[in-house]
Image (cartoon, rainbow, N blue to C red; front, side, top):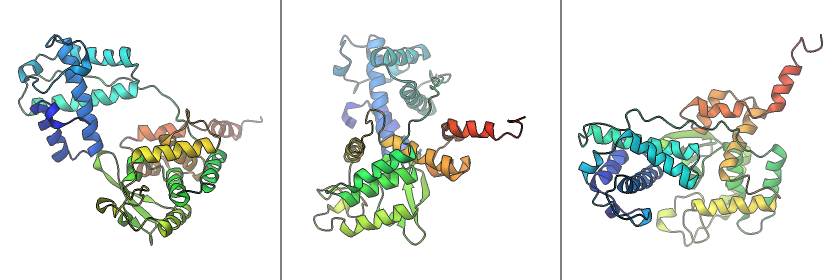
Length: 322
């Protein structure tokens, strides 16, 4: 956690702007702060503004606006190269940091803090085209059966896994669910996704049943005041944390005999999307809406994951047996 006192004033002003005017989510604000905090540390060394060589020890709280004006596009490219060569950062990570830097300099130029925007022509690193990893239908059933055999917090953990596998929900969205967000009569759930955007997720019978079974045993006494509305609680009566959910998923994957190095919470999101596309004949636009993807290009990865469907399509061609 980076404290505001560790930031130069212009960085805190940028974070305030993205929080209030751009209405970015708390997670996005944290990512911006982390990305730009480390970018400015690198710039201190790169532009020889400090004699300190250990980047972890560099203080940027007094980073000067005049030094900010010295940054050029080549310096940003140098930072991205540093991340790739030093930390083996993947294209997706570099893409996120590129986005943070681009939004930051756009704000600085708009606020007349700099005359030239060095990130004006900054390109997004080309992403690797990889097919998503996901559980098969049989593997998904194994995972649910493994949770069902759990003795402690079984109802809660089963509801969590069920929602992941059926709804394609993100980790942050699941943790943020409040009971009042659920419309049981219409079987709907409102969640706050990326970019602080609200969307509706429809709950099937399995989800509604799992949630109701959990609510029957959900902790009632000793619940912390700021967690009283939370759907999922920890044993300490607090809103369940990202880390706890990740631990639950990892533990149950291991119990089901599935590779925890291959699968994770996010892979359950891929699984839900893939199963819906493969077995439910879901329209790609409907899938985009369900997953909360801003671009349909992100959703289209799920149209390429089933080679068997492609094979069957070719075999069903009326000319196949001529």
